[in-house]
Length: 264
Image (cartoon, rainbow, N blue to C red; front, side, top):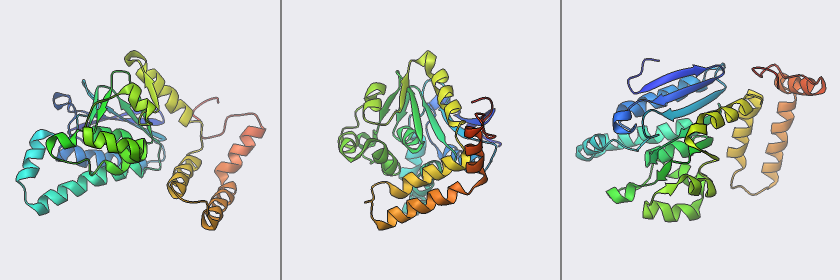
C-alpha cells in the first residue's frame, strides 16, 4: 500500500500498521482516517495475515483528532461535517469488525480517538507509561464515534465517569477497568506483545474468526431458545470443517496443526 500517514511492516504471519505522524502525536486527519480504514480492510481480506497489530511512531500511540482538522470541520457545512464524522465512525467499525485478530500496542498518549482505536481492537497491550482519556467534553464535544467501542471495553458504569470527567486514565487503571488486557514496562512491551501474537498463531484462523463472531452474537443476550439453537448450529458446522478435522488429528497425533508457523 502507498500511504502518506502509515508504515506497513510484515513480520511473518503478523502485520504491523504504524501510524506515522509523530510530529502531531499521530493525531487523526482525513488522510490518516482514510488510510487506516483501507489498511485494515485490505489486511483483513489477506489470508496470509493472521494477526494485525496497530502501533504509533514517536512519543504517543495517538493523541486523537488533529486540531487543524477539527477547525476545518467546525467551519464546514453540516453536510460536509456529517460526511467526515461518518468516515471516522466507519474506521472504528472496520477495525472492530475484522475477522483477523487485532492488537493495539499502546505507549504514551491514547486520547480521544486514540483511546477509541485501543478499544476497537480485540486486544490491548499497554506500556506502564501509557495514558488514556476520553477528553472530548473539555473541547465542548462528545466521544460519539468511539463511544460504542469504549463502552464495550470498560462498561457503562465506568463510561459515565470518564466520558464526563475526561480525566486521564493510567495504564494500571486501564487494566483494572478492562481497557488494557496486559500492561508491561516500556522495555518489555514489544516482547509481551510478541508473546500474545505467538499465542494467537496457535489457534485455527477459521475458528478464531468464528469465535469473534460468536461473541458478537451472544453478548448482552439472554440465553433463550434462539441462542441455544444458534450456538449448537455454530459448533456443529465447525466440526465438519477441514480445519477442525486437522486440529483434532494434530492433537491426537501429538503434532502441531498445519496452520501454526512452527512447533507448538
